[in-house]
Amino acid sequence: MNTLLDTTPEDLLSVALLRRMDVPGPRYTSYPTADRYVEAFGATEYQQALRQRAAMSGAASLSVYVHIPFCESLCYYCACNKIITKHKSRGREYLADLQREVELHVAELGRGQLVSQLHLGGGSPTFLSDEELADLLAMLRAAFVVQLEAEVSIEVDPRTVSRERLRRIAAMGFNRISFGVQDFDPAVQQAVHRVQPFESVRELVQEAQALGFASINADLIYGLPMQTPESFQRTIAQVAELRPTRIALYAYAHLPQRFKPQRRIDTAALPSAEQRLQMLRDGMAGFIAHGYSYIGMDHFALPDDALAVAKRQGRLHRNFQGYTTQPDKDLLGLGVSAIGRVGATYSQNAKTLAEYHDALAQGQFPVVRGLALTRDDLLRRAVIMALMCQGRVDFESIDAAHLVTMRELFAPEFENLKPLQALGLVEVTDHEIQVTARGWFFVRAVAMVFDRHLQADRARERFSRII
Ligand code: SF4
Figure 1 (tube, rainbow, N blue to C red):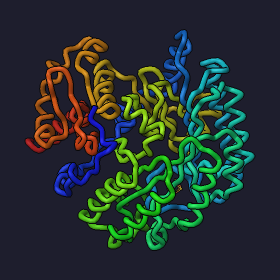
Figure 2: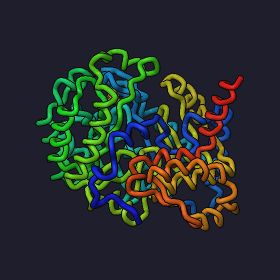
Figure 3: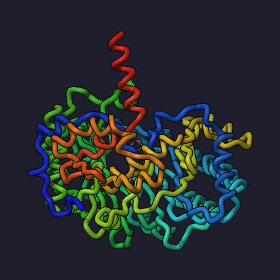
Figure 4: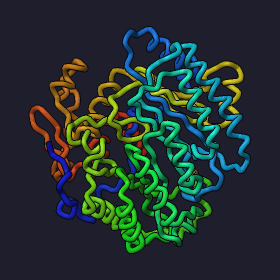
């Protein structure tokens, strides 16, 4: 299998190639992507999907995601669904809604469903007090059986925790932790209204290491205001010094028309397109030079981290939280705006707290949109996820599982792969598509070839240009 575990990207990536491939595209945490969900799929359809699962004997264990939308202060780059508030009482009110939502699930699935993965995201889960976090976990444990070896993870805003608080979080049973770092440069932190000095984050990461969290992730963003390739090099070195087991390196997308907080960012302070590419390349080269393995889609992990091991063994999977070692399974998305996957459906909860609360107060699931996947969606999802996770599509196994002949059915797609073959990103033989070492850096561009919805958009654009 073609991997990058011992490869530096200098010989694989040129700025010219990065420039050519730096096109916006989905992250494929689901296929079809969330922007394709429709309102025709609502609470009733979701309930039916749950009932189908309940009727299945021997259904696999569940993943559960809980969205905590609150944050105490606004980061100007933010594009998340969050509510900025200083009123701590909102946490308790929200837990009451979550309890209602959990009980609706219990009514359909029965109490005691096995959970092998539980993730708290946001917003800022640490907006909740320790007591509230403990109550939330107790409530979930009363409804589900969280397996002993389950991954129990939490996103942490370093400004909201101390070493003592981390100890309490570990004692509650969280065994994976993710810190929002973004950038360590003081001028960048000022410019995005998120000040968290390196020394305080270092203290927290060291404490998390001492507490034995199985994985410690650091999120970074390049393309922020005041960032320069020089300043970002310093952040890369500082992050590498902290030795988190995982690193996610995201690109900042400046879309002030869409995300209101971003209007506070001084456009003149944003790095140029050339500087952004340089930072991306430096990040990739830097973390690999510091001993990290490239997982895919801007994610890095130390070679003995479970993600890197799964990548080597071809056991990587992908869900709404990104790469995971857990095989595809049903995911219950709880909380405002949360996304779930049950059987061959996706669903999303109401995005406003008022709408979310009102549905629950009426005893209804707060699902407002979603999708029941067609046969074509399921086939393409299998191909896209095989590319994104294993970097390889075996025609025979896809043909057998979906009763198709891939080479014939996807003749136009194979034609569209040719430019990527010419760039050395994929190799196509009679029996497989293989993403090359270089192709892993652009794997979503390869996946996009098989996205029917993107193809339809392009056809529409061409059509509207013609007329
Ligand atoms: S970036 Fe995170 S902490 Fe900052 S406002 Fe957005 S959700 Fe809250």
